[in-house]
Image (cartoon, rainbow, N blue to C red; front, side, top):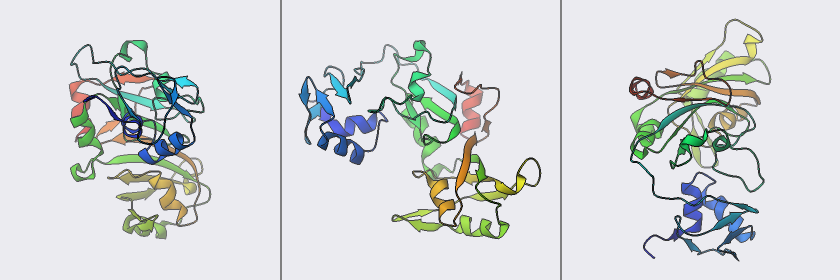
Amino acid sequence: MENKVRLQKHLADRGLCSRREAESWIADGIIRVNGKVAVLGTKVDPENDHIVLGGRRLKQIKPQETGKKIVLAMNKPRGVLCSNTDPHHAQTIFDLIPGKYTRYRLFCVGRLDKDSEGLIILTNDGELSNRIAHPKYGIVKRYQVTLSKPFDPKIAPLLVKGVKDDGEHLCAEKVIPATSGLNFEKRVEVHLRQGKNREIRRLFRAFTYRIHRLKRTQIGQFKLKQIAKGGIKDLTKKDIELLLS
């Protein structure tokens, strides 16, 4: 019994959804545990219980065969979820990972929504994940954003000041309008130190902008370079130092 955790916590820990979303899935009756429809309050043993989500069985979480820390950078394509699985059978980033990494319990460091693309970090190192993702460490993430209409530079300081949305304070660290290139008047570079759910989209929406394309290009000093769309890079110690700088 000591190994059992609440089903919604287990699904959230695996990166499938938030706890609230998991509770909704449970209430909808789309999850089975050991052949029985799960209910709110159901607890599971991640190593031994059989969990079926929307007709798709989740892999059991086995103890890692090695204590080796894995840190991967992926160039996430649009249309792919940052999740271990999806009840609607959408493709996830874990479907793109080579088989040699499947024995590790990897998770995403932060997320990119389904319609976004670019640099995502996958690891089994919880301490490293916290250092990259937690705002108190000040790791800047950079994004290339293409808007639905020309950007008014006067809005930039307002985006940095931020807005309240759904009880959260959303703000950019820096907003840099493009000055050249195709459709430069609609393109901006956005820097974030925090990473709230769909933060850039929600922030720009507050100023009546829709986002046509959003791509994360850099975390810390580590840049998305020479990684094909959908491809990965096993990061070296030097790469990890760049991530944390």
